[in-house]
Length: 212
Image (cartoon, rainbow, N blue to C red):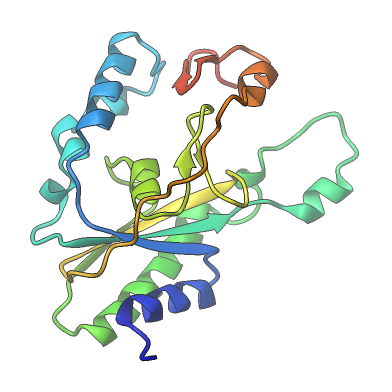
C-alpha cells in the first residue's frame, strides 16, 4: 500500500522527537469562544489579561494566516523521569521548566517539520506556533485526534497530560484525522478532589486566581 503524504508528515514528526502528530482542518470555535467569554466575565483569568485580547482570531483561526487550509498539531512530552527518580527535597520544580526553554526546543523542531512539508509541497506556505498565538491549542489537538479535554481543563492523551502542544498552519489541504472519541473522564473526579487550592471549581472549570 502506498504511503500517503499525511503519513510521511507524521513519521517525520516522530523522527524529530515529537511524541504524537495529528492533522485537522480549520474549524470555527464557537463553543470554545463562548466558554472563554464566560470565563473572563467571571474573572477566572486572574492576571492573564492577554486572554481578553484577539477574541475573534481565537474563534476564527483563519484570520491569523491567509489561505489557511490545514493545521498540523504535535505533542512533546515534558516528563522528566531522571528528576523524579532523584528528587529528595520537599521542594519541587514544575517539570516543564527544567532544561532549555521549551519554546526554543519546539520551534526548532517545528521549523524542520515545516521545511519537510515544503519539500513535499513546494507551493506550501507555513507558520508555526508553540504557546505563542491566540488560538485554542487544546481544542486543535482534540480535533486532530490526539486526546480529549478533561475535567482538569488539560488535554488528556492515552499517555497522560504532560505535553507541550505545537502547531503548523499551512496553505496545503491535507486529509484530516478524526476527532478523538470513545474515551473521556466519565465519573472520575480525582483531579478535582486532589487539587490543593480548589482551583478546579467544577468539572472543566479552572479558577486561575487559585491555581498554583
